[in-house]
Length: 345
Ligand code: UT7
Image 1 (spheres, helix red, strand yellow):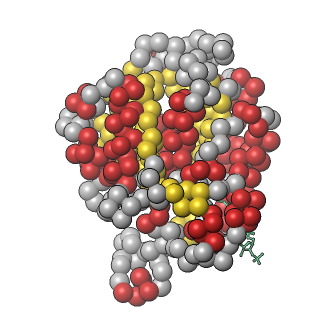
Image 2 (tube, protein in one colour):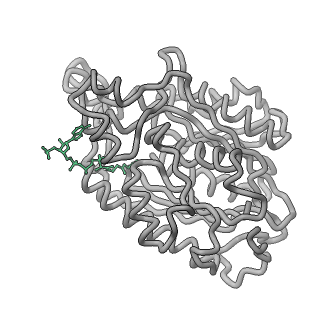
């Protein structure tokens, strides 16, 4: 087991046990839709091959939500599992934060819809939009509320129905994404375990690498906008790839530096599950071994804000993460946005 880090960080930005509070993840859960879409099925939909998708991305299949299954449904189901693991009842939740780029609707927030579905009647609720980095952004926001003593129990969810904004005629993007949700309960636990540091970053000057042109105030829905396929996501794959590797390495190194630990101390790295080649390149540049990285993208594809949340749940459930282990989450997404978090499990 990893040696326990004492709450005596020399670096004040590592806020572990700051002012006698610790922000711990006391429960995690995830949920993906039943329907699985395989690469073989995609071969019949667009001009692609299982060989291309597997060799360029590592993805073999992804889960796709039913027509009557929405982001809030996936999020609520993940939340119920996280609450159960944490031993928390809905009325104990003070705040719900949902990270998503595919809300059920522009407003009200998906967090409010989750609140209704799980019966968390006391909770405040809002959404966070940081694309694939959303779960880490939401973790940091939740942590701030815990550490400031504003709230004791925060439910953080990353949830997406990306199939609703994917252009199923665009082979460049439609093979990459999937639907799903992951959730975590954050609580003050005066122990040595918890979030040690969270790094967040953004570069709006590269917002045109990955975006959805239609549906906002700039381009509301019209017959013309729908006909021009503006309500689907668009991505410059190669440039996004390069920026992802660079930003994830920068974020991870900054998180490790703040905690004054070496990558070898990290038991499990949970990277954003966008592309196997991105994960390998990041691990290589960080000086990590392939065994340190948890990868599940072959079964889920890129689920954006849900990606690391689902992976974290799976890694703990299957025993890859044990109590006391140091875990590194590292993400990248549209915006551009990026982030990293070190957790003592
Ligand atoms: O989660 C948010 C962040 N997102 C990411 O991090 C994704 C980052 N980007 C990537 O993962 C990769 O860039 C992709 C997987 C999207 C593409 O891989 P690539 O090695 O960068 O390929 P490419 O874009 O250079 O495309 C190479 C070729 C092109 O054909 P030509 O122009 O060389 O003739 C594409 O048209 O592959 C073609 N292509 C496909 N062929 C078969 C693109 N998509 C497909 C496809 N099946 N699905």
